[in-house]
Length: 456
Ligand SMILES: [Zn+2]
Image (cartoon, rainbow, N blue to C red; front, side, top):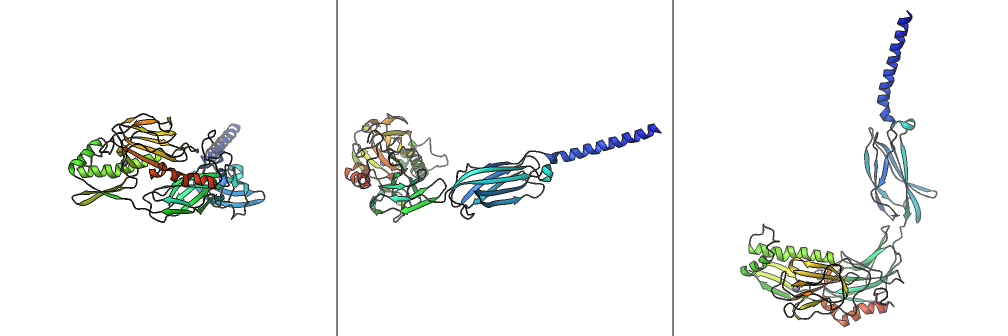
């Protein structure tokens, strides 16, 4: 009797243990203790007038239950987002937050973006694991202030302009905008950090009447722009007709045989690839190489004009005709100068070599940066005498003239670029132009020439 009773108890005990085990097996994962992870897609330092903040919240365990984002500043508090997730909960949520500090009654200055998130764990009396993450931010909804120090700027079609202005926020980026083209400015006066300059261009391909504005943007994204007082002088460029024939096109194609895509079969298709696609690619690569710069003016007085008789000018339009039909067009973005064969080519001014290699239609090509986004280019060279990174002095021989690339006779192709845009180089050779368009900008603003420290 006693034996039978104790066996019954044993069975009940085993049953209880099995049930507890099964219960634990089921319940245990629901009691996981890993809280959700919260991260911003990009570091956040400032909040401007309206901001889009990307937030990533994830949970490795039972998934997300809810996410709440608030903005807090002293006693002020605003809700940015309040989102619940249906069962079984989301493993990850990429959230796009529209944060509008002024609409939430926030003031300028320090604030905190608070992100709270909970998972679907049964811990904490079914409330889940809750994480609270705070991101300190600076509310700045005031755009920087811009002020032009320049009088009337006269700008030629295809030419260069210089603007001198002030921006009252040290961390703002700034410059000049011509239509959609953005030119960045520089701060070359250490004693006057708010005083800036920007070289800009009216690209030869721009239509007439484009807006020209000063612009600035602070790190909070607040933007300001104001019209710059510019008078654009319109001029028409000359047009040359170039009659193509098969032997000419074959001669040209032979030079680029290793580069022409194999699906260009006919002499015309090959020529068009060189004259249009390769030219475009070259100009884009050149713009990129000419852009990196340092904030001081390394050139002085003028750019030195290379030796040689002019053969083609900046802005020349070329129409290519085959069998009385126009098949292609191009614009010449520099000055062609022919001297003796293999004549020494000199740096137009002091600068830093950014490029010294073969470059498509320009052949062996050197690009020198003269600071503040101004660069010079030397094409068709037969020999290169410098390498990228070299510092060169005005008049230093950088190579020998030649006919590499798309050149039919020995000559130098000389270009100037401003902010990556090809401009008329003859302006830069002319001391009167430099006086009226560069030096006058500094003197009317009461500034010294922005030469490197120690040279002023
Ligand atoms: Zn040329």
